[in-house]
Length: 344
Ligand SMILES: [Zn+2]
Image 1 (cartoon, rainbow, N blue to C red):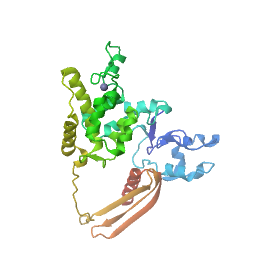
Image 2 (image 1 turned 180 degrees about the vertical axis):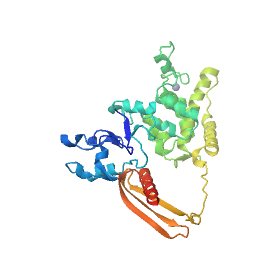
Image 3 (image 1 turned 90 degrees about the vertical axis):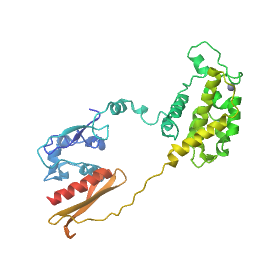
Image 4 (image 1 turned 120 degrees about the vertical axis):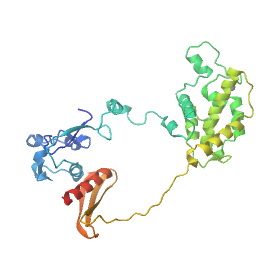
């Protein structure tokens, strides 16, 4: 069944080829071509003898990359335990509806079909991020959007009374907005973005290099406060009958600068604490195991090793080995397990 994987127990009854026990796949999915009838039903138990993989039990040669994945898959060695089921679509093996939904979607819908996820990574106020989200979905209630929803009114811009009020008109192309942007001082590197379509315009300005600044403040943050200020100002004009504010850019800049210095991510200090790290001897009569595992790529070819020292720091035992093909975390666990086995 899709999404179901197996953790191999010490009393395994799983089929070597057809059950999903190597990462999220069956060994059969990893290889191409036919398998002869005689080996199709072979179990993991039959493939392992004395804790070692018995490759001669199958009639053909498995490529080293697949052998690497197989030998890196942990198999329980102690206790009487059968195989246990796990949910392979999540990192911790626990079932979640979200991971099942992702798994159930057709292949072509996977990947980055939606292009607006940058909105939730920008450094600005949450309510401004929500506003940008609405812009991205063409859901800001400007006149044209209201008309498109079937409400009987004129789509004309209430600020300039000439063009239709679309979101891009309200934020950028209305004469009031044009003057606003000129006064706030769009950095020369980004002036050309002011002819892009709305989605590209918003994204390019909101995720631009933080070294691009205006009045010492990152432009990408100023920009988010600017679009928000234009929207709030427009609403004041429409609903509170205030006059157009030619100094809007000033208050917008002040808000952006206050945000950057008080809340923004770029000014948060990272606390670095230094401490000496050294190997400490265990108590008298005890030994200490130190282990480490790593992979070349993640996943990639992995190895691990370690050593055991006594309470004087003298060498007792050491080990190192090829783990196969797996992730760095699994390699760490293999190295620890090898060390614990050696210590027994
Ligand atoms: Zn206008």
